[in-house]
Length: 454
Image 1 (cartoon, rainbow, N blue to C red):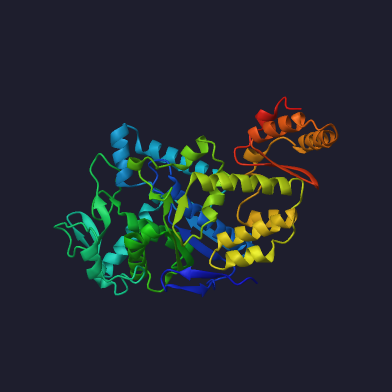
Image 2 (image 1 turned 45 degrees about the vertical axis):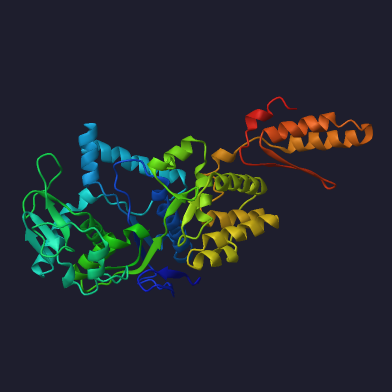
């Protein structure tokens, strides 16, 4: 069996992945708060952990992997959006949840095995909070229930900071009902204008962090294999998840391996609406950037490194994918994924290394191996190929070759120049050599511009 090695944020080293139960490999990834379109930074962890999901299924079998990614559908941002727009909260969350699924599907992401909504697990959250209070890890204050951070000795181990350092370096909410500034909310009161549920502490709603702890416990148990997300969630979200989960269920170890992807920039700068470089996934799709191209650009950088989205990278990715799709046209994928592609992904999800291997396979003309290897990365699949379907260029190759052969005799290259100019204008890369003529769709290829050329 393939040995997978993953960088574990908790231990700060690359470790051999040894699942708790190889018959049921379990992974939890923090999902979106559904109040608006997902921006391209939100999409990076989706693509990263989709590839890990594919790798785990490849190694352990599709029936032996359980992938959970949640939706936060109760949150103050959602409440604010409803108040601002005058729309019902349920309408907003239902619509934006579907937007998210559609946009991530356009990037080739498989749907997880379970996609729980926070509002479906309120009773489980209340039960976990009651348990934490009974054990002395939580307390009530002014209608709120808070977790006593200093009661959990391991707090800060994931991010590598002490509680006192966190207080000094982070914005913490100071409130009269808190025993300690670092204590965080498990439950808070709700007025009539926001969602609320009955609880032992009155009508209220859960804090953000308790959601993932309750849902992961219900769906994956007290111990599971991998917990993933962006590195912006490491503190406080993931630290708080660990604290409350380990205190509520000391018989388990919560997540054994922690994986965090780095952040995304656009054209070398932090993405910001004020800088005019803020893009949602839907923005790019509507601008004509294919989902497969977005996915390729994401996977060209290792998940543990900052990623820079640029128009140049998107153009290069489109050209590469067109060439690969041309090479693989009509070719059945190899029955086995090339070992070098699997090895790259098994080495801490080295997608850039896997893509380098795909380039090698393409250069060797191995269309079958290329398609099999690319499929493990979610590339070159039939589902993702609509954007690249164009005309058969072989008639144009034959016409250009014939015109060149005739011109060599007549010394009149007007027809050669006409054909070549038309092909280039349509976004076709023209390669002419002693061996013959080769035409390849390049970035910006537009089959419509070839109409009437022959």
